[in-house]
Image 1 (cartoon, helix red, strand yellow):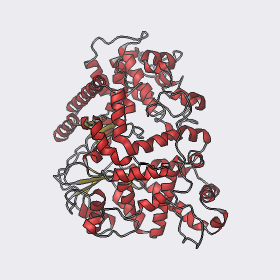
Image 2: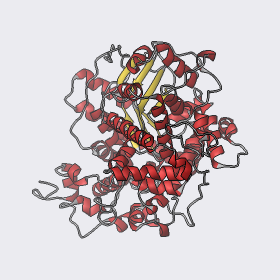
Image 3: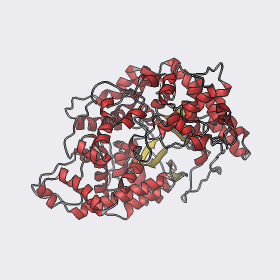
Image 4: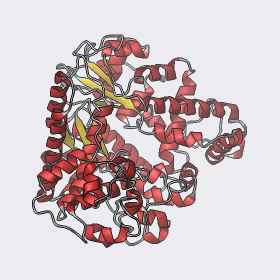
Length: 614
């Protein structure tokens, strides 16, 4: 899974340059030779010095879809691995019309299965009502399809001794908002809709499909996507009891309790005073607005439409091309989507295998030591800062007690334990679709178990944010890809590893504390959304560059740091920092971050008045 899905010969040159595809990349000395532009003065344009030989033209070639996912992946010989084709039309929900007698439709077994009654009904046998408020949590929780929101149960009783459900906006919203913004004209929208109708219905069916209804579904989906994308922008969170959450959603409390008890099946049932955390303020308002003012058939058809957009491209080249705009990019990304689906079904098994294969105990210890050193230096920065004493004490306590989600638990390194978890996943199904359905159901049976919590806390290998700090849960989630070259070299130079992996970790934590409330275990909220616990400080922006804790940690643990190619350890640190951050985000402005920093100017001996040392 750490090898690329397409050979070099099939990739456009800018992808090859961004990827870590040659042997030089796996020795930092070779990476310096292959990437640094010696014709550029680092004191004049450090970004160009580090990246101009390999970073593409950001104005025309960098796209959100592959900004990170293909940058650090090894080359493999041969053609891309196959992704078995699903039967056409199996994820589509037919709009807002009734089926005509005898009409041929390519129906949706996935949607039908997802909308079926769960084997264990809600509230110990009470029947669920069908409708828009029931379907989204069923898809999000039971089928692990975060169409509107990503909903998960936290382990134990983390907030005031109460069970806690954690809700965040869909990870798909920002991408699809960008896609819909590209459709500027009515003709572009109609062409988009017609492509779906032409594929999923024969000519006679299309004549009766009710195009205006599909326009309504398209427009509603677009509106939902924009609403959810706006929720992502909120820096604040909201705490509810189940009672106040139900009120915010415009639903009876007993109905919300029934839904959550039915989907999560906790050993002890949820009660009114248990906790719901909205990761972003506005989550509940958005959910209520989506459901309240629209016909249920529109909402349900929208769910099917968006489900089709997200999952059907995995199976069919036409939808990949439609989704990503060109056959070239579609061919590049198709293997990635296959991998993400496999990882969704077998995450613990795959990440445990990757951990054993690429990260032996000694390597893991080295990485953990680096994190400990950077975390300790981050805490010292806050101890030295001019902050209110109570806020300072709390944030320092958080940093020192921070959890890092990177390695699977030791329990799940055992083949016997993994076999117990995944026994029901292995079937004799003959189609990819049947396997996919079976695996989703098998994972749903794990909800509430220790394996469920392990799966939820492990970060996805291809997460959009490769390093992410959640101040509410006080956890840093990090993709294993970031613990490899060129971010971390197991036998490499400390300056390089601290500038790569260490700085990525520090930057994420500092940004998280600057943009999120700093206290973790606050009281639950009243019905108006205000906290009944201690007051929380706002963002704690120290006004220091994100690399600073890692740089200080490196200086404190540099030992006998060697020079490489006449570059000092300090120079190597900053080169590694700019290089790796530009892999995570090509538009990252190295110059803006290091300009005026005394540590940088001293490392490169930039004269006073130069562009990087004004």
